[in-house]
Image (cartoon, rainbow, N blue to C red):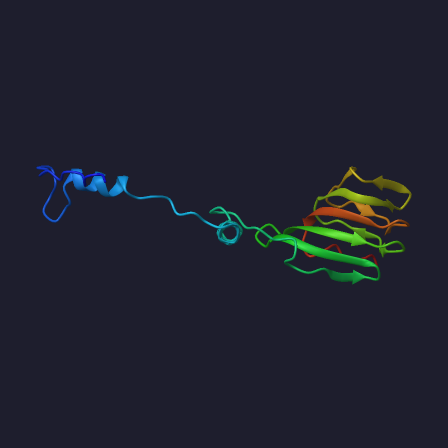
Length: 165
């Protein structure tokens, strides 16, 4: 049987503090707890959930399941990702199913578009996945159509440009 460590007076300890030698003896006797697989998984989920709940300071996160799609025309939906009211701009996803049409319109401000999936036509101008299209302020867009369906990331004016009358 082993002998307990000898506790000697430690002159550096303040009033109410344990002597250094006692602190070392206590710390040396601590053994890590064994966690079962279920406990480790619960702890992992809790840590990941907290990480997801707290975006870095000064940032905002919109999760895939958050925010909804709003139908703006038959077969055309928009999901707003971010709106900057001070500049009158927004970033959104536009999803058009085959047969969808966005009426011809004029842009009051610059609009940047990136085709993420599928293809579409602006009048006779064809855009496919990976293409970037920039419409200058004052430019005219013929009707936007798709035969295959398309997903586009848009950054531009808010509200959306009004259709031509």
